[in-house]
Amino acid sequence: MSDLQSRLKSTIRDVPDFPKPGLLFKDLTPVLSAPALMAAITDRFADAWHARGVDAVVGMESRGFLFGMPLAMRLGVPFVPARKPGKLPYHKVSESYALEYGHATLELHEDALSAGQRALIVDDLIATGGTALATARLVERLGAHVVGFGFVIELGFLDGRKALEKYAVDSIVAY
Image: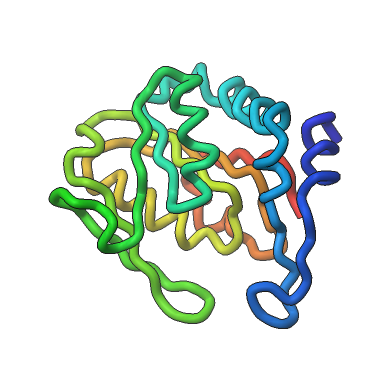
């Protein structure tokens, strides 16, 4: 286990029975309070993706913003927010997807990415992969290419990688 993985695992807080009984929530809030750890996460992702020709970083609402924006700045590329419905003011494209208990939708501005751009999609956590796959579909509908995905946490027992099997997936810590 790398030093960064050890630091993350010792900082991420387990919250039992949240958001519902029987679940163990991986709380990243303590990580956000550690500037050196946040910088190390950004550096780790930048090192992993720099040579792959990333033209934009797409972050999913809302915790994907926390990791995607500093990474975009570090890579010197635009940040593109994938938002929940009703949050983007301009013309947009939408993608609905199934959740464990219901459905959700994400949106991108229709001019957020250009045809041929190479987008890296970043989020705090991958569980089943539904949100990530919906984001990839949005990126591709705009004519851009998905370079891959970067996640701080991977809940491996939920098989989210299977939903993303045609893409490169990088996670820092796995449970």
